[in-house]
Length: 237
Image (cartoon, rainbow, N blue to C red):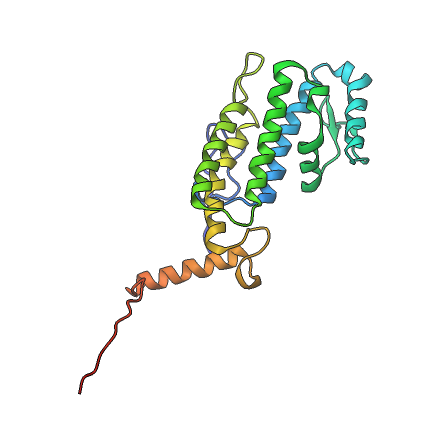
């Protein structure tokens, strides 16, 4: 590609300029792995950083209790450690399967009580339900429409103001990702596979998409009919 793409400046609501300006964000198609990794990072970050607001209590006992809860659900390698760049703690990076385990089995209410704890548990469980829907082998267009409504409701629930302020920092990432998931689901229906598991005939889905788009361009440029009409010719003596 012999084009030069210059960054013209930051835009309101963006922490940094877009790294891939050639394709508009409205045309991005995320895959399941990206969705689970990025959104769980936000959910877990909100949970841990809220507990770190009382940093002395966190250092004294809360961090140990969370590590024990992680060990209970089988993540024996999980631990907190002091950050080198900020006055809080970082934690062990988890893979996709481990993050699903946390969403399903970690008891949030042990650490956050009241309505706040119930809301966190709902957000975790509902996101897990939405994500597992993405992993289904067969999905209809009607189910995608229902999923879209459920995803929008989840976003509104997540963005509700808490403790007098709205979730308007890194959490806006969720609002950027979820609207594109329905596009991704329609791609799955068309190509019969996920972007993570491969496309038709063992090719990647990206490969299949490019072939399809190239054919459409060829048909358009050469005025090729998009359908074939069968005609029967009867010969009489």
